[in-house]
Length: 508
Image (cartoon, rainbow, N blue to C red):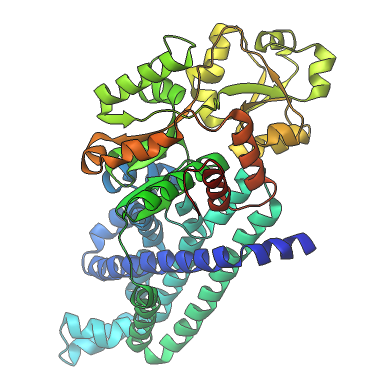
């Protein structure tokens, strides 16, 4: 408990920010879902034959996995709040639409006939009789939708939309840090409960006040959503730098930001922890971000869908640079020194027991061990796919998991080997043994800024500024900086600033 309180005290500012982001995204999504679903539900009561297929479509939309929806929306809307809100609207439509339709249809037919007999047309009958009576049912649908949206909003952090999912993902990335995960999960649950209680009050009020409660609720939602925008305003950044999940990309993007803002008048925004390679690269292509740190080996194998022509770092860089320019119109600037290549790691105990030194040595125990690989590594040629071909490995039990989970699984004995990165901090923390790669399956992975050509044309000064990091940051230095962020809970910005000052690249 004391550890959780300490994490809470350290992360209060982040917690407050993410709660507000979570609340704002959820309420905007709810408001738009109401504006779409309530009129549509009312319309369907006048055309009942269309009701079943329309409600059926909204039910199907709710069954589509949220990650699939987000991945589909990124090429059209980029990253950030827009695709997240669209996805949440799709998930929130069904309860409101179904309850609106059901609530109106279940109004006593005798009351409808009496209203018609009094000379009311369809619109007056709807507003004076049907809607007031059906409002409690409609409000119950809105309550259900709200709880669903608040819970699903945590996934929005994967595409840079913020919210409490950002803290949960950070906890997962830090080796399933239970305190960080709880710090994000508990407020999300409390937020859902609080909003449900508030809407329950409006639902009860609606039994007497009818439409007035519905209008009051909408006004309150609009005020909550608009308040932060009115009070804080927004300043558009000149450049947005994004990063994949993890401490290392977070440190690097902070270095880029500090260097650019120190040597220019440009305003730089950061979008850390955007998720896997495909998400971040799509965001760069679409224009949601302008720069992100990529690795030379990843550029060749993942983006260019090719294999490295050499194991020489300079030749790999030239191949990646030329390929990214020709195929995508992107510039890969000069790389840093550290080589964060893939490796296969295991515990000292297992390595000693079976005399494991090379990846090929796993062949003797492939039917006895369990591998814990990330989804990305499991599906890449410079990963398990290549290990199967180059080293003729067919590991009997392969479990895929998020990067932050694998080291916990290894230390707890749930898996025997994992994929790892050479500069990851847990390599030191857990005293892991890395298996050598004599067949050079894994090409060099040197970090370098990747940006579109049009960005460099608009801001040519970026080349010289970011190339100041060329040849800097050794494996040991990167590993130590990752350790400071992951295990000493230092902020990525402070770690990045201290390195740049130490190297004389900035003064303060």
